[in-house]
Image 1 (cartoon, rainbow, N blue to C red):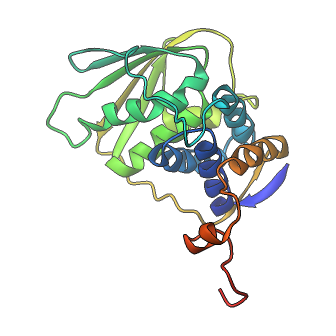
Image 2 (image 1 turned 45 degrees about the vertical axis):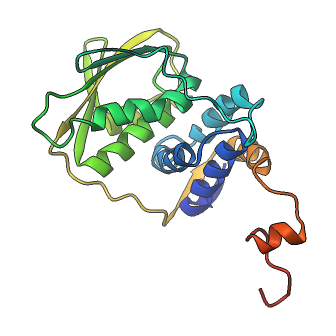
Image 3 (image 1 turned 180 degrees about the vertical axis):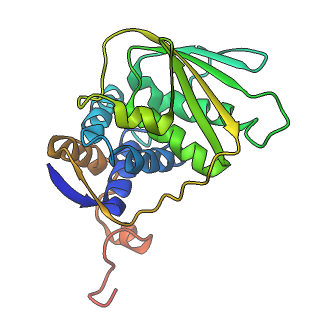
Length: 224
């Protein structure tokens, strides 16, 4: 285990996703999700790094495509069957769908997600969405019902299960605002940190006078 600041974890996660071809908004949201998930799951970084391995063929010149063809919508219900690593692609879509009706008035939007296990990174995204829209997200599965934060805490140390499960995800208005900051520190698995560092390295631009003038590096003089 290594100890890092939440600011370091946020930016390392963000750069790792950019290095694997994800957009800036997905990278930002995943950075916040990792900050949240790592409070309860030290191996969340290792799980995320394993997911990014599926996207090594992509980079900033060949970004990961937004795939919505496998999503089916019936009224207020969104259905999706996906592998856990695909939540890096679908997670933002799921959260946006839940947030549509979070301000009250409209009938709540539901997500029916079928997957091998609930990824810690998606739970972090759901909690982040709660904090932004003052909602409360519940997950119903196998005759159980839990809030997103409760499920994150209750997950096994590996962060994974093995059974295909159907999760019903719903957000209702009226939840308490959760303030999420980049201050403080957290212990994470050093293997995951090293792997994220490798992916983040792919987002760095080659050093040159031109790159320094555009803001990369420390500057052209010792006084920069």
